[in-house]
Image 1 (tube, rainbow, N blue to C red):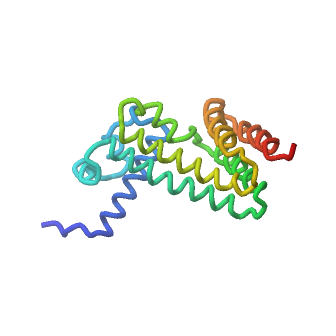
Image 2: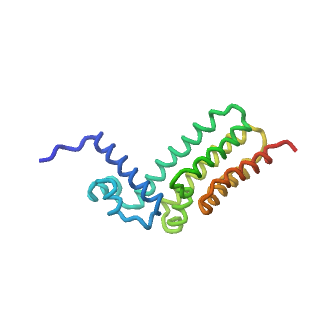
Image 3: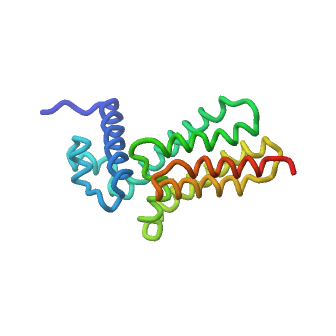
Length: 188
């Protein structure tokens, strides 16, 4: 009889599963990747995968939720190293430029998931909206510290840069959006 699975083993297996799912789903898209491919990449049997997540939709939501914490955390770490409030806002776009230039950059995972599943999955739609709301709030706090009421235009420039960089395969939209934000933050 096999030994019982420990909580630590469950935690590691779940993380390995989410790592494998994120790599595949981000690179190729949710609908293009089968659960068999996720099984093969994670090294876990399907039965074990379905104990963690009863459906592929649940797996996608968990992957997006975990990615949100890491993505916004990495952004905050980069931005909050900068003391000046104006420069902090511009640092967002410097961070985006670095992300856009990474090998394998395929755009915003939440925009991609929305494009694939937003109309058919309430759970994915809710997770996408939660991420975008959290990013807007995070960005809004940094913009608010400047005293210039332009949080929504700055958010839209960041979102537009993500989409444009993904489509063009070029990090230049981050630099262009940064220049536009610098003008928005400049005194009249």
